[in-house]
Amino acid sequence: MSGFEINMTTSGPRQAPLEVAPDTFVIRAITASTGGTWTNLNSMIIRAAEPVIVDTGMVTHRTAWFEDVFSLVPPHEVRWIFITHIDGDHAGNLVEALGRCANATVVTSRAESYRTSACLGIPLERMRMIEDGETFHVGDRALRAVRPPVYDSPYTRGLFDPSTRVYYSADAFCAPMPQSPVDWVDEIPPLLWAQGMARFQHIALCPWIALVDQTLFKAEVDRLASLDIGVIVGAHTPAIRGATVPQALQHLIALPRFRPD
Ligand SMILES: [Fe+2]
Ligand SMILES: [Fe+2]
Image (cartoon, rainbow, N blue to C red; front, side, top):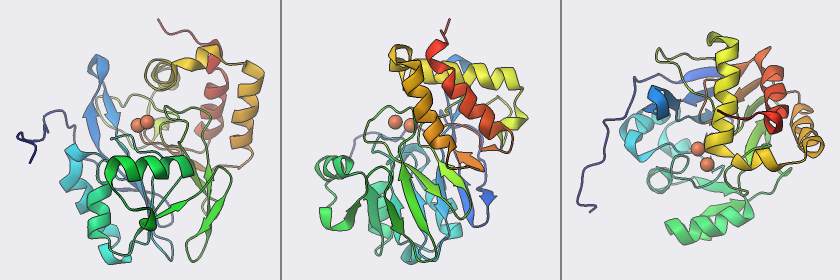
């Protein structure tokens, strides 16, 4: 017992799951953020032959998160829970999800698996370790762990599905959600999106970006670009598709030179 009720007052309007590619859905929530903006708190479902949950949402949105997830995949069919990293906004419902999804195995990086075991009490027997560039098979496809160029935990791994060309980027590409929520970043005025994304990375996600070698950092973004991504799903951004994918990558490359006000 915590001795208090979970604060739900910062929740924004509810958004239904968004199908961004065949059998690939963003599970969405919105919460109040700095400066009167909203922030997305996304996770994802891949209805592969062996269904995959990618990140497990927030404690504050637990009821809605389970409703949305189980509207797409029954609990007993969930086979994998990929955790990008165990920040509370990405693993908020992990323990409960493992309890309700008896056939699920957690997949995360080696270092994060030990932290997950120590912090959340999840036995290593229910975890599988995966490193940057490695794949794991989910019945009808192989998913690849790919570290995003920017992150707030070096244990972070994104997830790329070559069959749909959807990349789940964890915290990378975070950007403010407008007061009237949208599904895709191409519904936001381009300059507003670009500036909001740059500010979010510099202030909230990776202040170290101002210290990096620009050439080395560009090579890291180019490594991601070489995947030929069709859709980027980030935990804290409307989804990114089409022409906004290369634009998002260019915005990342420019980050070391950007100086927030
Ligand atoms: Fe994080
Ligand atoms: Fe996050």
